[in-house]
Length: 465
Ligand code: F0G
Image (cartoon, rainbow, N blue to C red; front, top):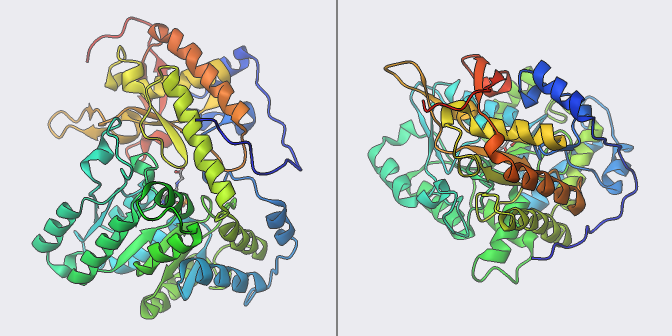
């Protein structure tokens, strides 16, 4: 597929440069082969995350100048309220400084005793962590196709409705305080959820009296997939699809660092006024007064404008097209990726690319290191470093189900020629893949170890473990 040119022209630029190879080598060594330890200025093309990394438009920057920094009742709060009412149809919301605070507020209030279960298609890490730190169980019920990198399904983020029904039938109602759906399904490869699946999940929740919330981070990208992949939706406006999706939900958590096209911000919306009243008290303690929620007035304005702007269909066509074209290019070069491509990232299958590196020598981490070493490109490992489980008998690591490197594409930041460069680096790595070696973990904390783990490169022939 031919990629579309950018539907904007450039007004401001930010310099990036490629450090000499010896410098990149030194930074890798000094940072224990952790990409988290590399300073951003030493990265040439940074595909670590699409979160908080969007380029804002001239309209958003103009809005920053109209930030009202009053403690209470800033005008930008009302602008954001109108945007949320118009776009999602939720009458009430609480602003927060990023998505995980919305999760914290919700779960610390609704998980009233240990062992309560929160089902979702796939919980994102922070959602899971917020459920687990409140002694809940975060249950992933994505359809089986969602777990297979090669399964071809238009909506690999869908909820498995049969398993959800079984859970609802077998569990006392009071043990399931809410059910969620993540749009798009980040932990499952940025895969979308169909409108019919959102509706059916909502109806099932209603049947069993369970509140239904959406993790809305990438709501516009999800709606674009509905428009382009779901029968009967092709002639609708994205804005109309979004309204329908959220009409089925009792509320949502949102990180505006994604489809809010902002560098910071988020919110929690709910139709349950009593719940919001309780959460407001907590918000005041942990974030700030409910008309700013941990944000400056100017940030609220950037989010209010970003939420409207992200619905521009020329933008969405370009955005999803850019990710798809990048994925197609890699496939053409014989680089194995999760297919079809999702909304915000391409996921390289390191297990398939580097079959000679055993899982416990971290093939996806080795590939991330090679991307930086060869081209100053930064991606993130989503494999055994991040998701190993522990063997209860030996206490040793068990490999994660997949070894992926996520190349997340920030919104409106990189052109197709930047991505062509990344493809060339991967092509070079493909040609020299037999020379790549695994790693040995030399330091790892017990919780969320991928953030701070460090490694040594193995120099000998890899041995089977
Ligand atoms: N939900 C999803 C689906 C996310 O992808 C993220 C963040 C959050 C919630 C939390 O939002 O960062 O504003 O607190 N994802 C980022 C990523 C970090 O790189 O995928 P936050």
